[in-house]
Length: 135
Image 1 (tube, helix red, strand yellow):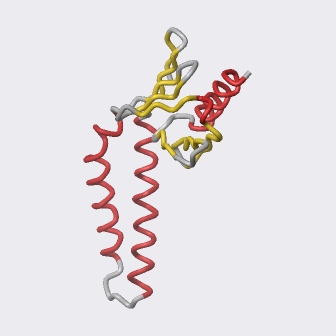
Image 2 (cartoon, rainbow, N blue to C red; image 1 turned 60 degrees about the horizontal axis):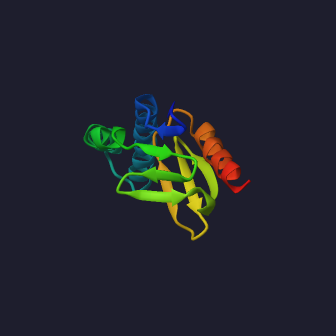
């Protein structure tokens, strides 16, 4: 997160992106190995290879797009990619999930700010800005 002139830019963190993909690779490998072993496949190790290859390809393919996403928190709105603009007064909650912060609005819309270095601090900052706006 970077702060300039009362506007906070929330950017993805490369380290968080990398850690999450390593976790996904190991989780996928374990699940695929277990699944193939369970159904009696004579080569369950192929699940490990397949999971690592799939996550590695995703890791490379999605990286440039994921690292370009910037959310901006002002005194009135949380703005994001694709011209998303959420008035702070409409935010009901912000919670964390792995390296992401999920923002929930009063209409039930949910927005994910992904691959954050400190998702808990980001959630707290958004909720604090909302509370200051309401006061």
